[in-house]
Image (cartoon, rainbow, N blue to C red; front, side, top):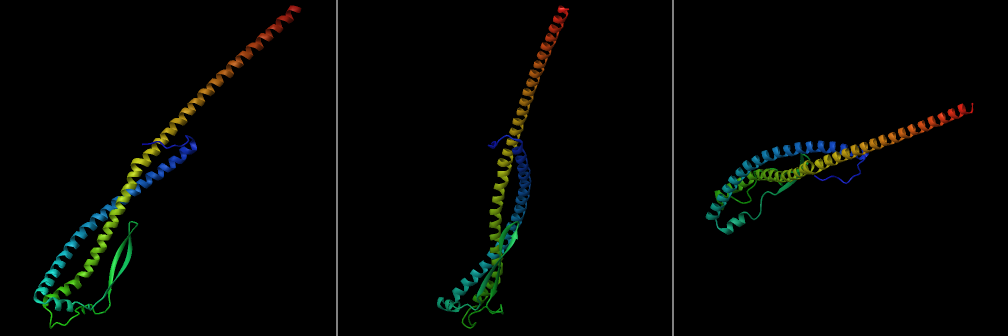
Length: 234
């Protein structure tokens, strides 16, 4: 804790109390945000794990079929069959807001309305394994886009969690203790000044009372002298 370098006045004390109230409220809101982000991140991580396992299983099947097609077909025939794709995919990127974090949402469109028209070759000179690989690859694309969006969302949420955690720690361990320490110091300083003022007032009061007593005594002595002189002349 470090005391802030401010003047110990009542105006500054009032201002610091308002800042402390705002910081305390902000700390609670940031903690709630951090906890909710952590909850959503963990749920998203579980979904990503399940989806990634599904994608990896499908990709392994695709690679296996491609390897079998490569084994039964010549390299030239395979390259010729896949040289000109039948469908072209365009990806659209949108965004959604998750706890003040803009995360991407991927969608895709094909150049042809018939999504089953995916084979860019004739079936006479190609193997069935290649057909199956192309078909599985077409089916896995939506899952791949969903996985990419979810993993990007997880990365963005992780960054936001780290930022929020740093802010919570800064409020909890730096700003709020410093404000409390400064408020405590100003209160002690104001109480000390008030006690000093009371002491000075009491001293002034004693001095005024002593002066009044002396003046009263002098007046009584002067009156007594005048009375004695008057009776002496009689």
